[in-house]
Length: 148
Image (cartoon, rainbow, N blue to C red):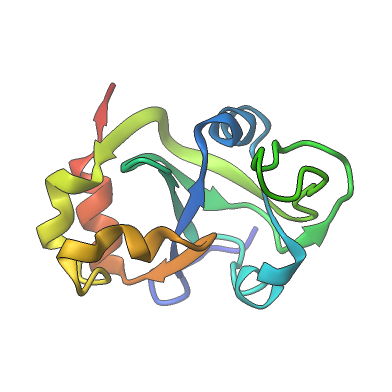
């Protein structure tokens, strides 16, 4: 079994909708579109992941449990007005390292997050699937999470 040190780890925010949160947290698999491959393949086993539910909620603390793989099994729900046939084939396995009922509101910690430079335009930072963050921002989010 390989052990990971904090020097080896990357920290990620993964942006999803509520419907896919239920799928991800119960199946412990996360998937993205093919056009996200360059960023997604950077996620390594042991990396820490926090999910951001559209609307302003950080939810759950997870760890990547695999390298990226492809699967064309229909698992996730596509956006209803975009490509309704999207199946998010690039995937990683994840494991929960804290209760999936933990969450925090973005607005409550916005001032403490360094990756959001323009605080008034915070929503613009979440128009993508994956955001790599530093350890300090990860800890701000993690330490502010409470059971809901």
